[in-house]
Each structure stands twice: as structure tokens, then as C-alpha cells.
Amino acid sequence: MKAERLEIVQGDITTLAVDAIVNAANSSLLGGGGVDGAIHRAAGPGLLAECRTLGGCPTGEARITGGYNLPARHVIHTVGPIWRGGTANEDELLARCYRNSLALAVAHGLKTIAFPSISTGAYGFPIRRASRIALRTIKEFLEQDQTLEKVILVCYSPRDFQEYQEAFQEIWIDP
Ligand code: AR6
Image 1 (cartoon, rainbow, N blue to C red):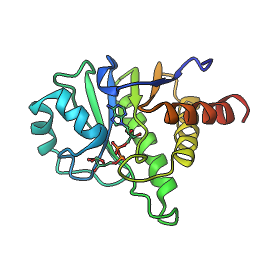
Image 2 (tube, rainbow, N blue to C red):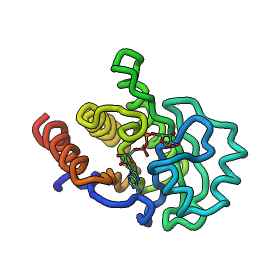
Image 3 (cartoon, rainbow, N blue to C red):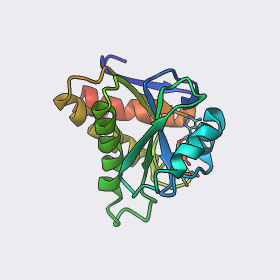
């Protein structure tokens, strides 16, 4: 894919040796299923211990911790919106997750960050709509930031990978 600072891959985000992987957490920040469960399992108990000190996180915001046993140096925890049909400000809240995670990475001097497809698993956000919001928000951010070197979007399933590639074409290549 030809966007120098954006990469879309299929795979397991817990295996990536980047400055930060983003966790699609819940507002307790105390773990759960999906990618959250996978990240906590791979990071080990130190991650949960640090998360306990944070006092949770509101929807749309982000918090940073160490990466513990992960190959990633940090975890940025963000809380996506639960899909309620599209009339509860879900689009804007999802965009804020991406924006605030990217801003937190920049504030900590990080250069490489990987995202899962936030809210599109247990939280039920339609993948087509979410992928466009993710791509548009990241594109806007990178247009005004020159410090991040690489943003990786990690799709777990082939179907999600396909969806993100279509979104990339629409938003990045033929806007
Ligand atoms: N690497 C990359 N992506 C993954 C991985 C992985 N190892 N595992 C799952 N995914 P979800 P949400 C994908 O449900 O919708 C948790 O219980 C998955 O296929 O993890 O934001 C939290 O504690 C999907 O595409 O997150 C919250 O309670 C994407 O990650 C709630 O779920 C997000 O699915 C958050 O729900």
C-alpha cells in the first residue's frame, strides 16, 4: 500500500514491536474479552496492576501504560463507543478515540503506533462505517503532524482487512 506513513495489515496486534499498541478497552480499564483480553494475557499481570492505578477512562479518551511482556513498549488504552444505532454521537466518539490516542503518542515522543479496529467487535459498531472514520481521522491527523513515522491498522479477520483496504482506496487514494 502506497501511503508512506500508513500501513494496513492482517494479524495479531499483540505480536507487533512498535512504540505503542492501542487497546480497545472498556471504561474500567480492568480488562475484558477480544483484543483487550489478548493484550492483557500477552502483557502479563504488570499491565493490570498499572491499569488499576488509572481510575478508569471515559469513552473517547485515552490513557498510556507500559507494555510489560509485550514486544510493544507501551499500551495506549482507549474506550470506544458502544453502537446504539448511530444516533448517540457514536461517530464523533470513535473519531475521538483515534485522535486522542494519536495525540497521546505524539505527546510521549512515540514514532510508531498500531491500532485494532476499535468498537467493531463486542461494541457492535458497523465495520464499514468504522473503517471510514478510522481512515479519515488518521489522515487528518497525519496531515498536521510531522513526528509520527508509522501508523499501522491491524485487522484481525480477512473480511475486516478487505473492508479497510476498500476504505483506504476511498479515503486515501481517491478522496
Ligand atoms: N489483534 C488485533 N485485533 C484483534 C485481536 C488481536 N489479537 N483480537 C480481537 N481483535 P473487541 P470493542 C479485533 O471486541 O468492539 C472487550 O471485552 C476484533 O476482531 O476486542 O471495542 C473490552 O474490555 C475486532 O475487529 O473491542 C470492552 O468491554 C476488534 O479487535 C469491549 O470488548 C475490536 O473488537 C470493547 O469492544
